[in-house]
Image (cartoon, rainbow, N blue to C red; front, top):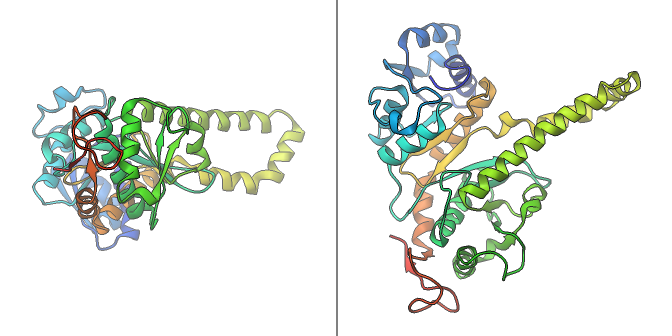
Length: 349
């Protein structure tokens, strides 16, 4: 029931997803009357869906604290289905804050994970790139950044199909002495971990679009600013292109000549292709679809969730965490025994 075009874009999106995942089964939580009418129109989706009537829905502007009190809301019951093992994952285009809060409290984090992170895929000059955290954690310590690197590695392998994704820590410079203590400490840990062959080191803002690494790791504050900056830049470029190609008759003619290339560019930059931010580090799969997406975008979010389920994302996350040492909270570089020249380390819980 969440999203600007809900519930129609959800049901229409599931009709598209049904073509790609004919063996999947979906539980739809929401207004039974409205969903029933839509399923009669989208018969392909109807064949794979079961409806669970819910009397309440969480509004897009509702505060997370208020959403937590709605025990019979569609989003809450969908998350309960994952926590109870009835469903393998949840996809929602609804209130982001409420989804994050409910998922962390109801589904909970995997053992060994201090905080979950939000990750998404975006375009670059060299192909798709994974970036995390995108806003779930405004402030992070070295332990969180190391865990995000493990999450990003497994996510890139699972969703992008990469065998050895390269990993970069977003920083204010690429030199080893740049950045604050937490970033340098996280880099020390990664250089001594099993991820060392994949760890590129520090990367800067321009490296995101350049595709210098397959995975970009940062705190939620920086990641969210970077994400919104790229979204705004994309809208600016699209607006400027419309102005340029409509400015004169010769410009319109130029557009007709350039249209095949522009169509390829539009397809490559289509935000629907990258729809589906994922909450990593939870005991179940949680995918957040953009609230303003259409059916094609929602179907892509379902694709992301299916990839994570089918390729055992959480099992691979547990394997990765068991192989890495992460700094414990409050341990600075001068504390206790050391592993080589890095900070004091302790096994992940």
